[in-house]
Image 1 (cartoon, rainbow, N blue to C red):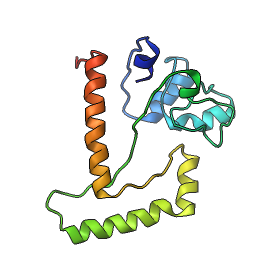
Image 2 (cartoon, one colour; image 1 turned 90 degrees about the vertical axis):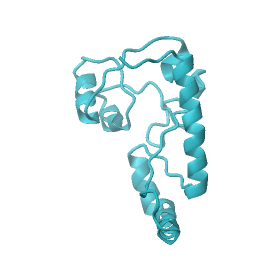
Image 3 (tube, rainbow, N blue to C red; image 1 turned 60 degrees about the horizontal axis):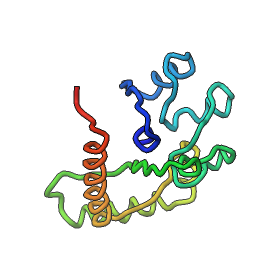
Image 4 (cartoon, helix red, strand yellow; image 1 turned 30 degrees about the horizontal axis):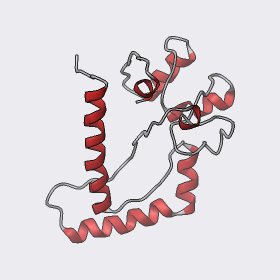
Length: 151
């Protein structure tokens, strides 16, 4: 999304996990990384933060601008979710939704997640289903516009 918005191409290097990618960034084998695991390395001075993809600056990196502040409108559309199998009883889904809302909105959860560059925001089952539909349409258009193809 960033390279498309900025008008340049990046070579995507797939990794099995963030640790391997971060090791290659620190070792100079790759030039950049989009991953919150690099926060500790940024704080240690091992790597340099160029931008954050969130809407707001990261609370632990107040001097690092967002990509939007640098002139690129990029909506990272990143989320984590809890799913249940199709056909799960509505009472179970409703109860899980209530409990997840309490967990996500708890101050200690928010503080912990922010330490890992995660910005907690709760959506209930219906609004989240709408978000998934909107994101699917967004990525379909991005894939078309950027001419992304599977090798």
